[in-house]
Length: 310
Image 1 (cartoon, rainbow, N blue to C red):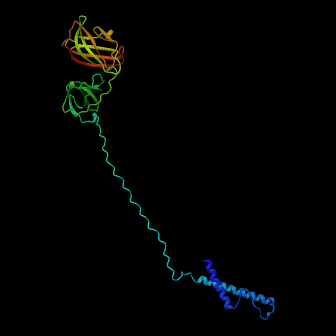
Image 2 (image 1 turned 90 degrees about the vertical axis):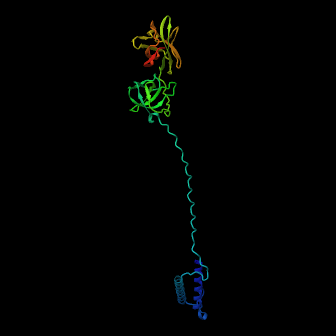
């Protein structure tokens, strides 16, 4: 753009010099005489004034005339921005497949249960066997809620939920269940305590001419039993028989004895009744066994139970 402007200005200056009859490079003097200093000075000032006037004229013309586009030239269209590319639609997430909830096992203590009735006083125990500790007594005539049944060899133990929410096991001999028990759960029994044992009357016999009541004793606990005490009271007469103190650190039977009874093992224990034959008699039996001699270490005491001697 600047080169074009200077070219136009030069053409204008040349034209103006030609019209005025002045050559910018030389000055002609008449008569061929040598010019004096005054004439040269006057001529130089006149030339300088003429050049300044021409420059001012050209500058005024350049500012006054706006630059126009060349006639006939095609119009340059305004640049257009490309249309924005639409974003792809948001990808839809796959629908989650519903997961079936894991079936909830309802604890026995939270089940509705089956009604029951205590026909006698019931020892409420921590497990389904008489060698579990007693948690209390359910009095005869009490209404109870049965919420479980036993899974061991003895089907006569039932799990009760008491009014205060306590769960305990009772022997079914003195319990009347008043409903359908098919849907009751079979809870897992807690581990038996050390010193646990079961006892029952096996027979009556004689040893050395003396009568005896023979008991079968089984170690139900996790440790060996080393001492045992058995007391027999005859209903009606009130007579009491027991194994003597010197036999209580052994499991004495006719003709022999065991020093200890290992877990899971069964042995006989004979209680001598002397001249009394207790066959057919109703007996009230109390027993105690411990994992140490002289009734030390862990012990379990059986509450009195009633049997009829064979």
